[in-house]
Image 1 (cartoon, rainbow, N blue to C red):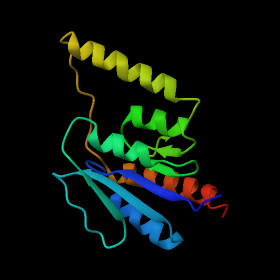
Image 2: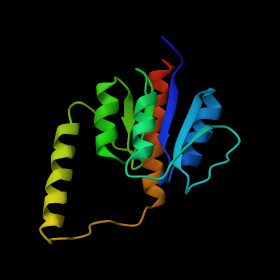
Image 3: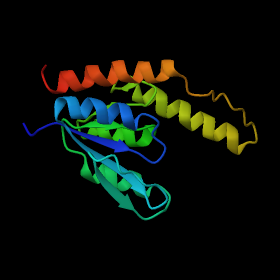
Amino acid sequence: MADVRILVDADACPVKEIIIKKAREKSIEVLMFVDVNHEINDGYSKVFVVDQGRDSVDFVLIANIKPGDIVVTQDYGVAAIALAKKAKVIHPSGLVFSDGNIDRLLNERFMGQKQRRAGNYRSFGKKRSSQDNDSFSVGFSKIVNESRNI
């Protein structure tokens, strides 16, 4: 099996520093995917810059996924495709996507979009907290360790 890699949907990813820290500790390659409106220069990851456009980053990230990769994304569609490509997938909140929860999550996303189109917009968003970072760090470390058989 090829070495594990970490692929990051990095445009709005709030946990890039946590990812880089863990990757450095374990000597894991990191690929960050952003559009031309973002700049990343962390001195460690390989950065892929793509044209601005709807889902342009997602398409390039998806094209680069290999079985066994770890994917960090907030996008449920990207997560579903990554799971189909046999990657391990985690949300920046620490939620680990799986074959057991992706259908429900996609359905909830669809229903939310349907409600918004009907004019029933309600925001349930909350500010990111240090607890969110802690949850991600724990879940991410577990996935990395499982992937590396450590």
